[in-house]
Length: 391
Image (cartoon, rainbow, N blue to C red; front, side, top):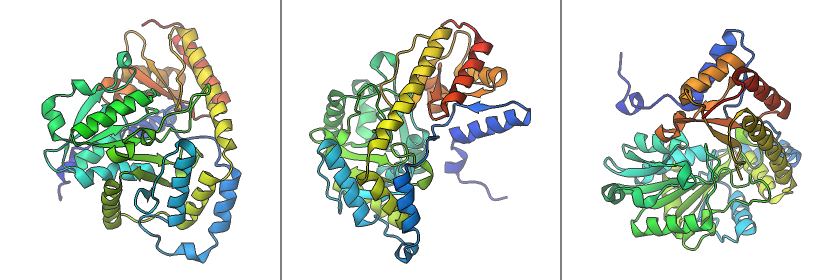
């Protein structure tokens, strides 16, 4: 039998595929499972967006091959959205690229700049695709630990000089998955100075940019002086507009990096379905009141989770953004053993923190993207199984 390529054999099992497997195994045993594991919004796509899609799908012009870069009208909408949101001026022709979900661009950017021996600086814990894209491109990842004592922000001064010298890309993600940590302007200015001093391209994953609580508005790295010259930002309609299944996103920022990513895309990928892009324009430029309503729902669920866990013995602060609660595991458990315990005893799926990297050991991630009453039921089951916990 023909052997798999080493790059495939060396890939770790994809985290969410493993979670799906555990859910299936539990259900096969007759366990009534409630999953708090995957951050897929349960709220519907806003009606104005769905109606626009329903109309546009009948347009024969959308039934042909789309442009690799995306419709100019969609890229113009992205530029206008950034201008309205944070005063960021973008040239839609050269500084915006349409993506079939931001995962595509995040995975492909390493192919643009990483050669064997080169390094990508990736957060640990972090979205697995940062490291996987670099691995598939033949490079190495240096894990930047995100620790509670540092506000789950990387400390650039701790990266060895020999690693910095080989680094080509710096992946950042705020609001953060899985920790829900946020970054302020001072941090992004420091990141920009570090990247520019060492000829490193920043790749900021801003998928949760519109999900803030208690009046907090997440910061875009592109809003910072020098941001657009330091790298690119990935964003998506998935979380802000509940469109995960639609697969529509973009990269924006430094023109030569956008051009390089577009070159890879044009050679191995295709463009997004134009009817989806038309619906995306409606999302970006149409009524935005759905975002406030969505954030209110998530804020209520955040409060339910944090208050329930604190009632069991945790001492959590309420996160300011994103759709996750990042919680330490009780004494006597690892991330994985606690997740297995909760699944077996309570029929509740939580994500073990070490699935996002070694620095995630000792934590679990709970998602807020589940019906509120089901969430309450999951927490009741956890309390019945755990009682009071110690740390």
